[in-house]
Length: 285
Ligand code: NAP
Image (cartoon, rainbow, N blue to C red; front, top):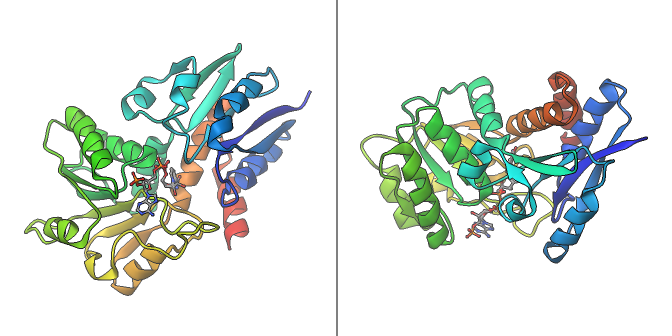
């Protein structure tokens, strides 16, 4: 019988996961279909009940459900519990188990495609949702020496900063996304090494596709500028970063590595990473 996996989010028109996950399933000749479960927030509970069927191996979770999905699950991994966000669910014997593969995916992308070891690095994170939480956790676990959280909703930035302080043992400032607050941290004697956009700004097929989370004049030219948004490959932020001479890292490598870990959790097979990259690049280009 054909098994199912898929992605749960809203809206999902920008998502590339169906392309490269299906390519990985087909590579092994698995009778598995990767579905798109576009789910308005008010239908989340009903949709999850439907997915508790024996034909579903598990699913990915994306915007805006990574945090709110947790109460619907039977169990979450220790990392997902600390991060407070789940991006991969495995269904085993009717039990839904949540994982967070964004954090390992981010570090692998940073090391292998951004050429940066996070040990001792100073980072500015834009955003305070599920992705920012995973990136903050990953940076602290891998030795980052300083973090600042900047978010449109300042209360959410404070909440995330407090949670991450418990992990890091050092103080983590929380600021808004306005120019004055950001400039202060960007003009310190010790420069920021890494800036990561963890907001949804710049995402194609959205009303915010032409928007940048930070003005061009503020982009630190000596830092690595990373955008978690992967569609388009060059977001407005990465375009500006390239123009000011900064190094850039697009969101696609992280997407593939978090997806590769999800594939391994669902199938127990080694993910065909090159096939996954090739499928995603040819779709996006
Ligand atoms: P989320 O939990 O819904 O958080 C969204 C974030 O974006 C919040 O910080 C929110 O700020 C901010 N935001 C939304 N609209 C904004 C606006 N108009 N102006 C300023 N800030 C705004 O989403 P998420 O799960 O963290 O995902 C965030 C992004 O990362 C998405 O684009 C997602 O596709 C991407 N992502 C990529 C990968 C990858 O593998 N490349 C992995 C994970 C996530 P407020 O708190 O003020 O609402």
